Structure formats: structure tokens, C-alpha cells
Length: 519
Image (cartoon, rainbow, N blue to C red):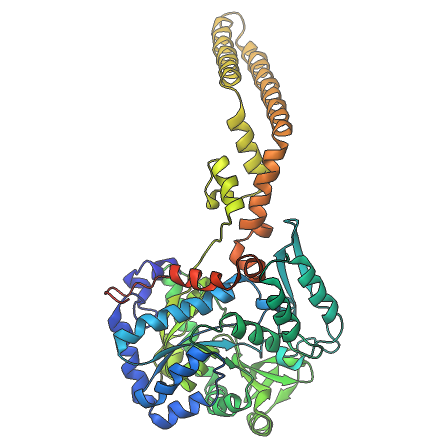
């Protein structure tokens, strides 16, 4: 939400304060401290994986000094997924580091692996540029029985080895390649899941930085979150009403609800015979949306107590679960997440919580030297390439039109227009209806010269074909598939070229503005 990022008061009131205001973090830290005593923090630590040395060092002080988390998360993608997954993690690390001197406590970044998600088609592929600068899409074939099942339940067998080989084959061989290729193969053995491979890759890529990972399907986490999920079922109608009121208030302010509030919809999924299925209220009971199965509250409760993994939160309830289980002061989110967090303040309070301070993730466009040279040659900025190639080609061709040609075309059009006007005036006394044929002749002349100009531009495009190919290459790097680079390209494209130094270089650029001097 742009107004929130710009710190507009009418937008910030839907959130837990301004992400630029130090007092917002201090206030949230006090609320967290009131709920998280030593035992609660101990339970939180038992649900995370601290696989990096810097994270383990930070956790040594976390319990004794009453530490906090800056959290972020993402549905796991193939081989890191899009770059923005990495950017989320780095923003969280940078923000945590900046909050430590402010809160005078250990603050650690935490990445929530959304392994309960069931959108296979969103997670089963990745995009990268190969050694020939051509875009490649690599996709794991649909696995047997995968439809609508949570990602953590889908072991990868069919086609996995081939996809790993193709992915590695598309990357260049550099000084960094052997270690990266070993990481990729080691993280995706046959039988691995998409979440399992994702977390192994991310842990290694971020091995030198203080960040921990938590799996949303972790058995201890599922057991700990059960009371929140049961409460959501019990109060589903009241929570639907409060979310509908917030959506209405957003609309009155000129915004819209990022996540639609569906009539009867419960903020929970239950894994039944049709896979992970949205729950709907049905009289005094509940109905599974796809399966159509009707279940009583006590039946769902009984099944979920026997197997806590069957019940899971939807996108609106997931942040509430996270803040209830972990001492979270801030959440780092992308544009879509910032928008739907505006709907959640009252839902947090309905569960006895205050929402964390929502901090936007950093957005970066990586411009390699070879792409920078192309931009410099054509006097273009990266953002100027964010449009269809034919529009850019036409603009370049127009710029290449010799001044004398432009001048001649302008003079011809001016002469035709002026002469047609004079002739129309001159024939008025003879026959006023002659105005029509003269106007038609003028328009035909203009059309003829428009066609001539079009052919001139086509000739210039042919002449500049090599240059236009260079611009198209730059567009593939900066806006692949017509989308920002960070929403498409896999991080391994850049890691294979620039090695581990890329990570601290990115982190250095992710400045955090808290309205005070913090190193």
C-alpha cells in the first residue's frame, strides 16, 4: 500500500503504527514482553532451526536477555524461487540488526516456510537466464497424488533428477560453480519436498548471516497453534463480521480489501479427502468447500487433536498464529502482504494480540555491467525498459530519424494543412459542399505521409536490428516476461556469476530508516 510506505496517517491507522517510527517498535516490544516470559520464549526456540553460526551465537543470548524476532516468510519456490524471497530474508536480517540498539535486546530474523500451502502450480517451477541470455522455465512435473495436497506432503520423484540436471546445465561454469552445483544436487535428492529443498538452499546461501527458519508444518508448531485455530472455528461468524467491517472502512478510505471476505468463509483449511480444503460455516456445523463434506465442530476438533497437521490457517490467520507463537516485533512483507495486513488489526485483537509493525521488503533491480553498457549506449534507465519491446523499438527508431527527414515531413504536413484550409475557404462561395471532398483529400494526403513515415521507421529498425536486439536482451534481464526481475528470476543466476560476495553486497544496500541514528 503506497500510502502506508509514504507514512500517510490515514493509512497507518490500519496498521500497528509507522514502520519509520521507533516508538512503534518499542510499544510492540512491550506488548510482546507482557506475553512472552522465559518459558514462552523457550517454547518458541524449540520450534525453530538455527542452522547458521551467527544465528546460534545470537540465540545464546536470546533466552537470557528476552530476545525478539523480525519475521518474514514465503511459499517455498524451486531453487530459491524468485529473487524477492532472498530480498525478504535480507531485509529481515537488516531490520533485526537495526532494532537491536533501539530495543537493547537481541533481535533475530526468522523466515517462516509456508510448507502447508497447496498451490502446486505456483511453487513447482522457476525461471532463469541461461548462458545464451535466453529465458528458461524449469518445472517439476506434477507428482502423483499432488493435487490440492500441502507441499510438505509431496515427495518429489517423477522428473526431479532431469529438472536438477537442466537447471545446472543452464548455469555458467565459473569459480563458484562446483560448490553451487553440489548444493543444488544435495538439496534436492529424490524424495525431497519443495519446502525441504528450499530451506536447505536458503540456509546455505545465508550461512554467514543471523537468520533462523521455521517450518509451518513442524509438529511442535502445529500442536502449539491448535488453541488459536480452534478459537478461530468457535468465533468464525464474529471474525467474519469484523473483517467485513474493516474491508468496508478500507473502501471508504479509497482502498480495497486485498483478500476478499467470503460469506461463510472460515480462516481455516482442513485436510480431507479432497486435499487441503477451505472450511465454510454451514448452519451450526462446517462444510469442506471442494469435497462438500459436512462436519460438526467437535468432529473437526477431535480429528485435529489426533493429527494437528490436518488443520491450518489461511493467509489472514497465519500472521496471527505466528505472532501468538513467537515474540515478533515486526513483519517484513512485499506489496501484496502490506495490502492485506491492513485488514488484520482487529483480527489480531480478537485473539488478544497487537499486530507487529509491518516493514516493507526492499526492492532491487540487479544491473550487470553488460546490461549497464547497453543502457548507457541508448541513454536509458532500467525503469524505461518496463514496457513492450515494440514500443521501445518504435521510440528508438523515431529518435534515429535524421533531422532533415523530420523537418521535411513536418513542412509537408504543414503545407498540406495550410493549403487545404485556404482552398476550403476559397470554394465556399462556389459550393459549400465542396468542403467535404477537400477535407477527404487532405486526410488522404496525411495518411499517405503517415504511411511513408512508418516505412521510414521500419527501414531504421532494420538498420538498427543489432542495437534493438541488445535492448531486447536488456529487457529480458531487467523485466523478464514483462515483470520486474525480482518477481521472476532465480537467485542462482547471479550467485553463479558473482559468488557469495553478492549477499553482503545486497545487504549493505538495504538501509533501514527508523528516524534515528542507528548503525
